[in-house]
Image 1 (cartoon, rainbow, N blue to C red):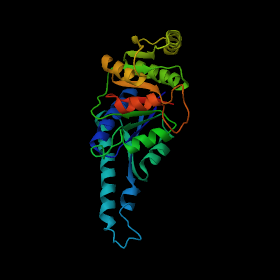
Image 2 (cartoon, helix red, strand yellow):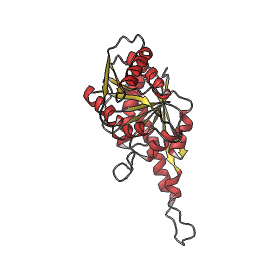
Image 3 (cartoon, rainbow, N blue to C red):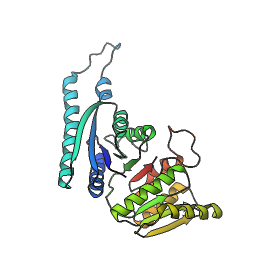
Length: 273
């Protein structure tokens, strides 16, 4: 059961989308919400230049601004929660953002984070560094929200028979039932016998869902592309999948399909662990 949700924000416009989505989800699920904004020590520490004979700027003003920004993000999040008829206890803490999110995330059932952060306009990586670090380090389910995402719509469950996808199926059942949304199950069908077995398994996992369940498969192309295409065709509001596929090698890295879907999906992606 998703009874507690951590909403992480840096106050940026991209994070604002994740705030709205997380608050809407929490309100519909009647989950307890906690908010977190991290004052990153590395910002002010990076302005020091020991050994170069250069005097650093006065840091008091910079640190005061960073704290004020984090406090402002917390207030915005708490105000949004109240407007949605729920509460969110948000706090600003110091440290490295992904480490603090992972630490606080240990006490909740789901982490919600924006795919992009404050440096989205000038970075070269495909997702923000905080989102990337959080996804690699956490052991909790995490929901990654891209810019412009709206809450609501059918759920796409990507199922490959891995342990993570079985957990994803259980989460999809809970969300579909509580949000009253159709589930579209995607299974890669390059091997027809294996695909049939996976559809049989996922039907058992979905059990007696009262919402409609649709099945989708494809024999051509990369699985990550086909998952995203399935979500687009279904006008889905959420993709749910395992963080690791059947070829899991190292827990520190996401599965290749999961990583690619997070990078390219126009709708939020919930990675189950």
